[in-house]
Image 1 (cartoon, one colour):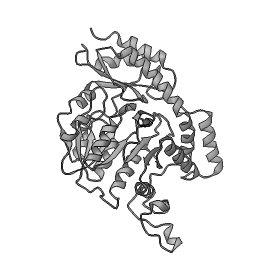
Image 2 (cartoon, one colour):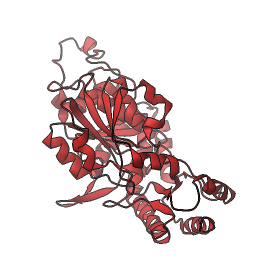
Image 3 (tube, helix red, strand yellow):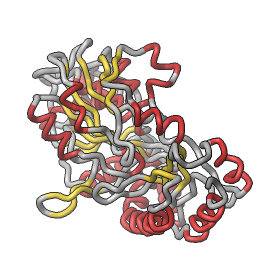
Length: 393
């Protein structure tokens, strides 16, 4: 394959970290996880970080935590505003906990939630909003934060595709994933850093931190820190070690995942700088090409990939792109999960749509992306340009 969608970013440091864990004899959650959580929280200037086994699990325990808050918990039947374009497990925990989804269209050029439609999505039953920064490009998180504050909504920020992206802040750049009441991250193989499998929830809220730690591990209380106590400890230390305080799961990470994550996090600034350099070349070559709509950068993208939408005026269809890309050995796929209301799973959801979702449907029907990696892709991007030059007018 000349240019695949994902690439291995592990080196000698990650393999040495794995060997260190194997030699320790401690494989399940332990000191490596704690160290990675501390480093990740510090990188994002957040008080708490809770590691789990995937970004999907991060979304799950984040939603679950909001149902167990002592004050104003979410309840079944409450409504949550969501963007129409994201990955499936942005939405599944919301459905599994009995929430009604209100789908809002995305901006065609950013692929992120259209904040101009939020007021139309609001009803007396609205209790939460989910914002997703799609494929490295920050959503208008400042506007979403202000909207959530104005209407007393919980704000869950799904940042699984946009680690290390930034928006301007009062004291410089503010990382995406830090605007919400909680932010979620993924460390899957193809993402900005990879632990093989893994995810994280970050928050400044002590109660959410305690709830997330209990929910992560069976619903027991042994991992809940003293400043996040959800219950009064009993006097029987034998019973306390196996005291289940709320419904939970087992979505714990392994020590190997965290040890690798520590090494990858050290490399992240360099990874991001190279991704952004690749993005600049892509923007230069395709920014004025009227056949394609490319993602307009909002703030500083961490450039997960290069999404492209075939313009209706291009003179060709998306399907006409696929053959030349395959022949050139260039991998491609749909934009994230496309418009989620177009998938079979939507029949299990209680939902409605705010408007016609015109842009989300266009991204679904006419969009695709090719990969970006943390190494020089100059030859690959040049070849992409040459391959696509033969299409249309």
